[in-house]
Every structure is written in C-alpha cells, then in structure tokens.
Image: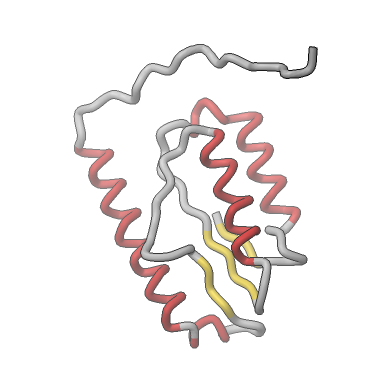
Length: 124
C-alpha cells in the first residue's frame, strides 16, 4: 500500500481503502504479507508510513520490512528517481517481499488458530 504524503498523512483515498478493507475483509487479510510505502517532498513521511502500517498490525498481517523505512523523497514528477537511498530501500523491500511470498507458498505450516478477541473497557 503506497501513498504520497499530504499534510503529514496518507491520502484520504488510501485511508478509506484501508479502513474499508479492514471492516469488510479483515478476516481474509490475516496472514497475508503487507508493506507500506510513502513519498513526500520534505516532511511527514514517517507519520504517514506509521499510519499505513497500523492497519496491517491490527489485521494480523505480517509486515514486510526493508533496510530502512520505506520512504522516497522528491517534490515533482520523477524526482524520487534521484533518491538513491530510497530506491535501494524499495529494491530491498521488493526482494524481501518476494522471499516472504515464496516462503509462505512452499511452507507446510498452517496459519495459527487465534483466540476469540477480548476487549477491555477501562471506563467503569
């Protein structure tokens, strides 16, 4: 899941997709590898990146990592191609995703059975 950064957040469209995905198909998303990518001009990328990752964590989706946060920097079209470290981070992410998908597809292990969700309300 990727998004440009607007005002320190992912786009509203991406957030809407994530929230609808969680609500309508959350159970089907469990165990599926996920990765977040953000692109920004200058600031706000880490908070947007974190926002995208939070949905994956809540849906029990294994998060694919890289050598650093999956962020690219550039102000205009094509400028992110000049971000050598960002491009290397994305290549590492792609390698790790391919590795994880291959491991999952060839493995014999079943997805772990989960306990029934317990909610705690601290307001009494």
